[in-house]
Length: 552
Image (cartoon, rainbow, N blue to C red; front, side):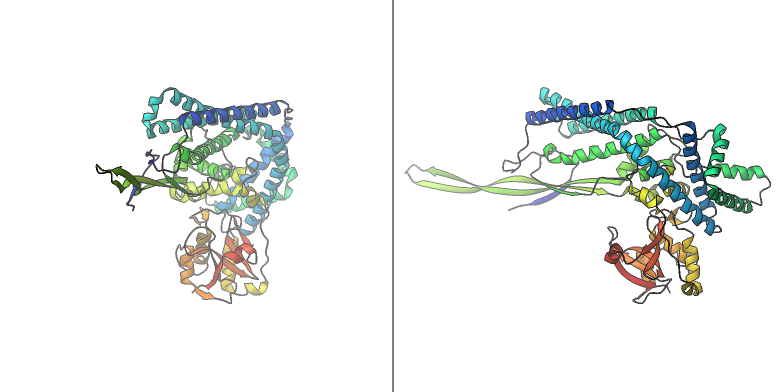
């Protein structure tokens, strides 16, 4: 027999029933394990420090090399900023600039990646080992204090909350220290006024073709602003575009913000890993999304919200806000009324033996823990206005002009690789409707994927891109989602260039989840990550294919 009741809880400590199959570890056992863990991580830290001490210091870059790096980053950011200003009129120049952008970014990241990995690995190992040791020490000190003062256990959930806040403060302190240490070794990337001329000359010598493209962009800008009465105003516009896609914060603060966010995630992971040992329920069920984020998404969001240079201390509130919106933790406890049978045997005055069997009731607690990772890249549309969303798109398109900061990010390969090239046969372009669609769609090749984006100003998601293109090619359907676009189409098994193509299961959502524009020969143009051509014959697209649709 059982009676079920439901209640939500947040780390509530419920006593175990006498019949629970789980045995909670004693306070002494937990303290001993914590001490052993602290000592082990202390040994790991010592080994990491010894390895770092044996490493030779890196050779400092000369002034010429530093100037070259800064010039490349500056022009890179400028050119990309111009693309967004001339979004419709400068189709050919835009494509050429984007090709140069991704090529230069790839060369920079390739040349620096191996050197930096080899040079920084021992230091990173020390930082990681130190983080683990600090955390283990804090945990041991807490448990030792509780063991020495048993009265603290009466606090239950409150006591655990205090422990959680203590660990959080430890991580915050550690992040600040890591930022300070990184600042001492970080190379200055800001371009000073006194060195602009020399760096510009060096860039012209290295990239004559790029300079020609730059001048084309500049001339177009002059034409667009021809109504202005002063060349000074034009000059101010050019200066304002320089570095529009470049992170303004120092490297130390960029890395410090990433370290602080990783610290919050590590704390959450620790809480879940130790959940059964810190809670007293009879049965546990876990439904957990992965705990992960991309550093470039994080830094682009922060840089879009905080204009100009920022420090890691100034963005602590933003980091906490983003963390709370990305990770949604739900803890639900179901109480079942259960019983077991107990038998008593007794003898009466006449010597007769009797047996009585009866039920003994107890509460049985079943805890379900659910963690939803909302996906950090989906947040900007919900927390930003159009201006901030536009800045976010710019930062993501160029990875802040710092693809070397986090080379393991998948965005580095996506946004620095050459775009997929595809030549449309002239015969297809004889169809004026398709020609109009293609002309509009190709303007945005290379634009980053921005969840909820629906215009060149904010960039696009898949349905926002398709909606924009067809609305500027003869239709007026408004802003539709992927399912909405499918609903207005007529399914067809014989697609032609200009039809739409739909997919399901590309992410966790019901119905159609992705869409693109069919361009013939089993190819489509779509807002992937970034906007590009894609071959429909790949196993991925074949496995998610749903249907072709013809616009009304």
